[in-house]
Image 1 (cartoon, rainbow, N blue to C red):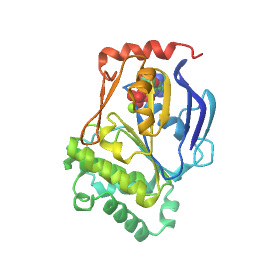
Image 2: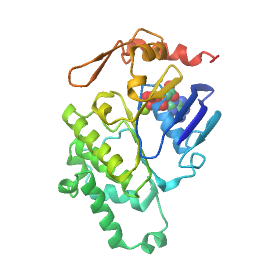
Image 3: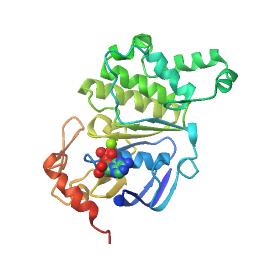
Length: 276
Ligand code: ADP
Ligand code: MG
């Protein structure tokens, strides 16, 4: 996958520009940045939902929007109502029956494939994400971490080459974040699937990452974590002093990270500046 000098404009506002990015097949990549930086917009540009206003992009060797089911996509978190009685296994099956949420394939298409093969595939991905034991419970009665595994299984059910996960660790506690990160990394490594994961905090996935993309102030920086997550590069990107501290257990603490709401005005001014 590759982006060259790409930009996206939404409602006459440039969300980001000058974004260049190269992702090799099988890589595990994180997209990190403050709220509103345009992380979900980047995922949607890869999907072809948002067209580029500048630059070029190639996704699985095709223009964005052409790769269809070769891409698995988990949208940014929706929560399930506690009273929802649909079972986890049904949610995963929806990934087979519908080409998109709410737009099922014509009935004839559904019956053409073998139902048993579908059942086996659903069972296989449930096993892959470790969700077999609660897949027949109503999804509204499963925990946040369990729901997230079921949704990842749904995104995987077509055996995609590229998996796009928008904040799959959001609103999970630390042990669940670590567990899901390990599941995703295992899928990437064992199946050779390229993974782009949007994350707020890079720490739970840091040890698995081949590449990280930082988005801030309408710009992006990408490269191996050791090159990108440094005091110097992040200070430059955010336009404010950032200190990256290394903890004894191999983690990183980013101090002065413009995550706090007080800094959100920065990105507004940053984004409206014309790039040189
Ligand atoms: P992030 O995922 O990093 O939090 P988003 O990509 O969701 O950021 O949003 C980036 C910016 O683009 C935000 O200011 C948001 O309000 C704006 N935005 C997102 N989607 C649309 C849209 N469909 N139309 C107009 N503006 C949008
Ligand atoms: Mg988002």
